[in-house]
Image (cartoon, rainbow, N blue to C red):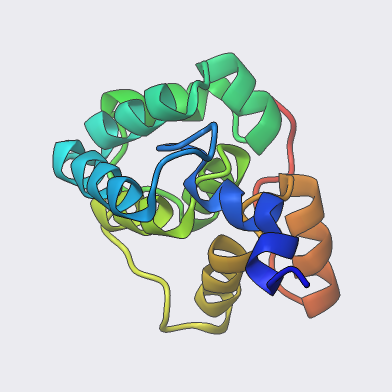
Length: 156
């Protein structure tokens, strides 16, 4: 009989898709690569955002389409031409890139916020922990059912 982990390997394997797309690395190697990615992540949000976009293979245009965050906003985030980053937009960008929780939370910290204080932030925390392989539309459906504010809603 298969273990639950083996039975659901596709879902579990997706957790490492950024560092181990083929799903062939032993656990210790995945841990080393995860630490390497986090150690190499730049300190500023704009640079870290560009770094994560490269890792996940997204162009600005593709990310705008998937996240429903405008190309102009993504451009401003990449260049640092904003004073504050929208929690909703950053969460939408993480979901659209299907970032695993460890990478989403690192990027969010670079944006200058954490997710735990408010009801909305707790919903985003759950989304990033459990729904990061879903589309932004699916996440918005969940948030709507929960009575929470939706992530970005306008297609780029």
